[in-house]
Length: 64
Image 1 (tube, rainbow, N blue to C red):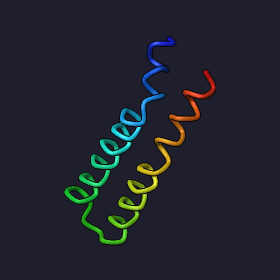
Image 2 (image 1 turned 30 degrees about the vertical axis):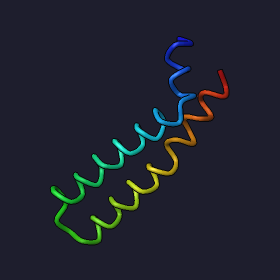
Image 3 (image 1 turned 45 degrees about the vertical axis):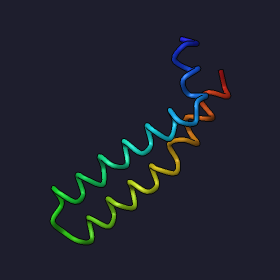
């Protein structure tokens, strides 16, 4: 278990997960969603995930 949590201490790993996740959400919004208002909401969700995911993973590593 400590091996997995040690990965969360790496900023490159935390930001890599966030960028990958945000890219997938934004791509889904771009290619699947047709309504412009919903697209903007999906992009906002992707941006929030891009900012919040590394912070949450950092806290998880600090609680170890």
